Length: 201
Image (cartoon, rainbow, N blue to C red; front, side):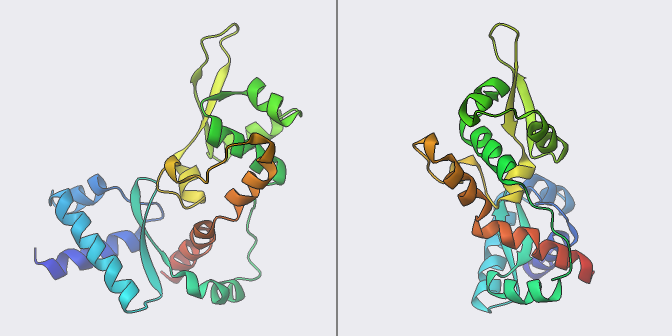
């Protein structure tokens, strides 16, 4: 397969996928082309999109690669889709999610100790949305469940990995940390643009 054909296939694969594709998934689709070659081609594609100021971008996110729309055009997408309902996380959910993201694995009791409120409903909602998961049990009396974030969490907030979380030394600043999570610039690009790509297909 020629280099141009590999680029074309990668474009088609990324455009058609609703989720980030891992190098292993791309390798399988490309008849076991070496992952180093796939990554090199993806980087070339990403550079070409940016240098030509195209409306699409390729980003590395949540352990894979995904095609999204360029940040500069978000305002036009909002105008086009202004009537579309976008489900957003509540402030309470964001604060609980911030604790889980930074302190994982963490128990329900530890979360409630930091928030000083009952979190049963919030935890159920986050579990239903697949943003958090039960990551095991704590070796403590009662063997309580511990919670952690999921791959969908990384996708939602536009993160390659947990190492990209904003630094937060003091959990008394939890509301600000939650707001920082919700205002993550890449998140806006993942929430709207991917849907636009899907609708245009």
